[in-house]
Amino acid sequence: MAMSGGVDSSVVAALAARTGAETIGVTLQLYDHGAATGRTGSCCAGQDIRDARAVADKLGIAHYVFDHESRFRDTVINDFADEYLAGRTPIPCVKCNMGVKFTDLFALARDLGADCLATGHYVRRVLGRQGAELHRAADPARDQSYFLFATTQAQLDYLRFPLGGMPKPQVREIAASLGLAVALKPDSQDICFVPDGDYAAVVRKVRPDADDGGEIVHVDGRAMGQHKGLIHYTVGQRKGLEIGGQAEPLYVVRLDGAARRVIVGPKRALAVSAATIRDANWLADDLSGPLTAKVRSMAKPVPARMAGDRLVFDAPEYGVAPGQAAVLYDGDRVLGGGWIGETEGVESALALA
Image (cartoon, rainbow, N blue to C red; front, side):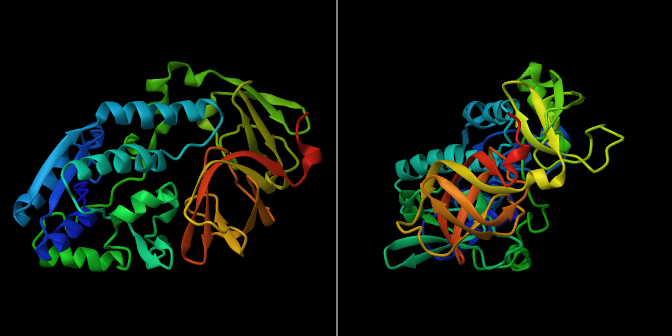
């Protein structure tokens, strides 16, 4: 049982122990977010480890803590900083799931002789005609399938997600009925190592040159001013550009990491017709049917199709940022996905030469 110290994984551990199966709790120490911010409700930090241990003690199950802070820093935090400096918008939660959490936890679980690895993620594992499938959670507000697109078939065969069919209030009710102290504990933050949402401060700490400025350039080639560092901008951003006197609002259209340029333009310049998908992980053999694609964690899936390594949208899509994930669905089933590379603008004539 992967135990982060939160209510979700604690309830899964309790449900597993209640079946009579030998249940072993494992926590990876990744980053002491609680110590950095003075707040609880993070993930795999100091207070969370103590909470996980307390739950395991109450349930009467074994609990082990493994220090993976160095690996987390090397593979997640440093990658997070490098992606921003390259002009891409990273998703560290996916990198953590596909690396430190799932890969390392799998190795630990198998070393312990476990029959399966259970987690508190809100997704469903459904047995289909050809084996285990990954599906969206029953509660759309809690669905985490976007962040788990990189789960491999071998991992999915070994994983269990007991909360995928439950709404969050029911999970808290179970925790309260079992007398778990974490029943009312706040949910973890999306990015556990970013204190108070100030990701720029984290990037500066890892890469001191992150605040190096550069040009702000209009998509038609006009110089518009100077920016204060690529880490302060994302595709689709409107506020904070400090460019006044324009006939229409300007948005960040693209980030040029090599030249340290912020490319801006009108909203129509954000429209994307297709995007290249890199390092794809597919959980289905057939991608030819009607598909939907989700290109941001908070976005609704939109009709699209795959053409080789290109994701082609049925209608122009906005806010498609290199570095983010594109996840494909067939109804509620997750077909897989990959990382967004180059995008193809609808108004190609606006693109810089």
